Amino acid sequence: MRFTAALLLAALVLAACGSTARERSASRLTVTVVDDVGAAPRTWTLTCDPPGGDHPQPAAACAAVDAAGDPFAPKPADVACTEIYGGPQTATIVGTWRGTPVNAGYERTDGCEINRWNTLAAVFGAG
Image 1 (tube, rainbow, N blue to C red):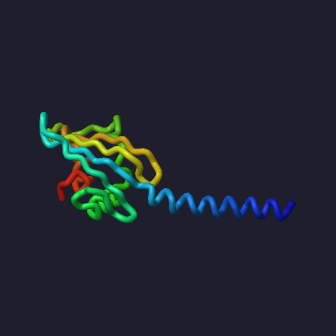
Image 2 (image 1 turned 120 degrees about the vertical axis):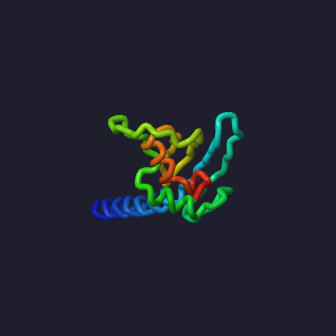
Image 3 (image 1 turned 45 degrees about the vertical axis):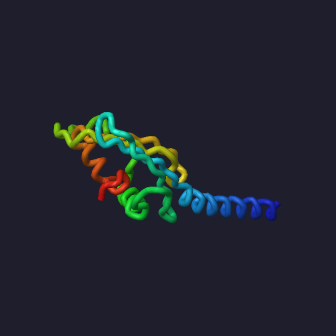
């Protein structure tokens, strides 16, 4: 009985260690940016750990996502944002980041959205 319990515990510990490595490497994002209404979208893939894909600057883009804290969270509904227009650009990021599904949209229609955009400027091909 003790042997079975010890074996089960060891298996659980090993499984937990393996999932951390797997989650860290399971980062594949598709980034689509539209610079203006009616403009053709720019789309590329971004992988991290190690940085890659066909993104023009994958290392800078991965570093921006890492530094952002919660980069895929939407703008909080209970926050007042400045009414400032930053431009017609829009972007989407879909895929998986460290094992977590991602489906996020970005625009530059107010101060909060501009801040979200600027935080990930390297991901969108600027910076």
